[in-house]
Length: 214
Image (cartoon, rainbow, N blue to C red; front, side, top):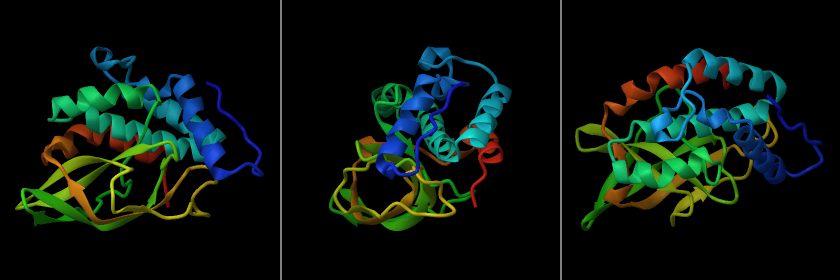
C-alpha cells in the first residue's frame, strides 16, 4: 500500500485532497464492502490491518480514511435505497468526500418543524474529511421519540464549517467544527432508523481501534 508523504509547507486543502486521492487509488475504500455494492469484499481483519498501517505512515490520511469509510458503511446499510444508490458509488470512487461525527456516541441534532419539513440545529467539533470540493455528512437527528440518521450535503445553507483545526488534528486531515444553524432537512436525505447503529458497529469499532482520535 502506498501513501503520499507531502511537505508541511503545502496547504491543508492540498494535502487533504491528495490524501483522499491516495487512499482511493490504493483501493482502501472498497475493503470489506460487498462486491454487489461495488466493493472488493474481504474481511474486517484486512480492513483493520490496512487502517493500522495507514495510521502509522500518514495520520492525516488515516483520519480521512476512517471518516470516508464509515460514511460508506452507513450508506451500505442505509434503509433509503435511493440515497444509497446515488451516493455510494461517488464515495467509493473518491469523487465525493464523506464523513460523520466520530465520537463514540455523537449527540443527535435537534429538529424543529418548518412547515412540511425540518430545520436542524447542533454542533460537532473535529469532524474530518471536510474537503473543499464537496462532502456529504451523516448525522444522527432526534425525530420524535427516536434517533434517526440523515446524510446532508456540505453545501446546504446554514451549515457552517469552521477553519481547519490544529493539534491534535493532523495537518491535512481537513478537520473542523460543523455548526448546523437551522439546516433544512428533506426526507430524501433520510438515511435510516435507529437500527443502523448496530449494523455499522463492526466496521465502526474496527476503525476506532485502528485509528484512535483524542
